[in-house]
Image (cartoon, rainbow, N blue to C red; front, side, top):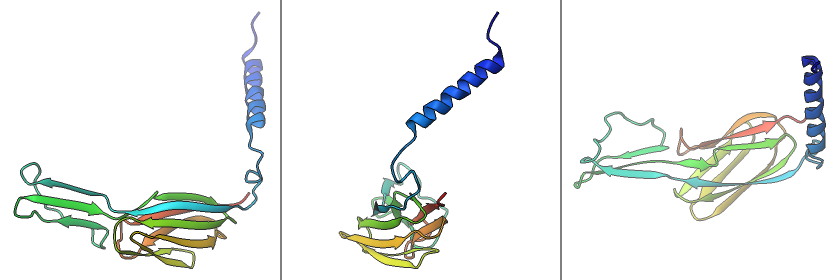
Length: 163
């Protein structure tokens, strides 16, 4: 006589619960305490180029706003494409955290930056680390935008609600 399916299911679920309980984090962060967080980012400009001998120059235009750049072929037939970006493009924090964004400017002279939904504005300059500190007091999804290089130079700030 074998073990019945409900008994096996019960034992399996019980084992998973015991395992999850034993492996659960015990830090103050797991308990929901606000933390001081520093997020390291970069303002970058990936570039690509080729020649018209290898690939034809695109006939469609890129979106306007300064975030995408398409340079027509030069006299040798070389054309270039680039885009301004924040890296990483997604940041996840918890509501109540004191957050410092540290963004190093790699490309682009200046990036006028704002966090939509928060009253946070600052500039990121090439060759410098710019810092913006704020309290993440509102849960939700907010954009970190460079107003000079839209639409591509946008990162997403996700603020998770406290339990």
